[in-house]
Image 1: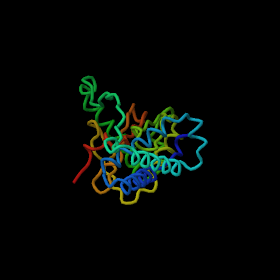
Image 2: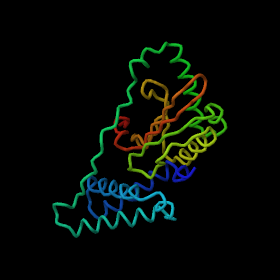
Image 3: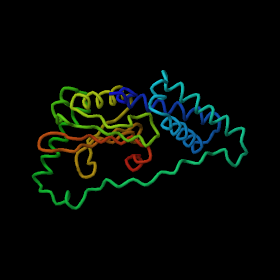
Image 4: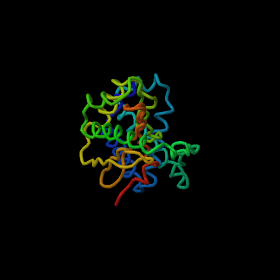
Length: 227
């Protein structure tokens, strides 16, 4: 469970905000600050696994890297002060397929019942309740889009998944958690001051959750923001 202990959601958000504040202090531009922080995390994920593992305090490394990027940009001609965001290939959408749409109403109701049990356990941080609703070979996948220090590999097994989810969701000050439809099924949306910080959905087989999908990528969360 090497990536599981990387950071809780609260720690990841605090870490990114810390880096944004450094860039804002040096540039005074939110657009430039966001791009500088994106470049900082790009460099983090460009490291080999062994290199990341050798970094005792990732936040300190990220702080130094963000500061170095800022200083490099300040020393460069003005027209390159704003770094170019890395180009990413568009990812496949997550809309329901026609086959899924044709599922019977009974299957949909059963899915929602199981997903709501899972969501309730997530909201309360009840590890035992989470484990009870997970399939033995369940997996969890999180997508930080390279813009948060999130896990970069799937985690497998009911025990590991339950620990992963509860560790991720611990310490959520000022975070609202609501049960909402995610791709047409019950899921969780976490928001701070109306801005979505995570969306969690689940795949279900029978009476068990077989996979947990956690979106942390700020770019993919914009449509979940609320006034």
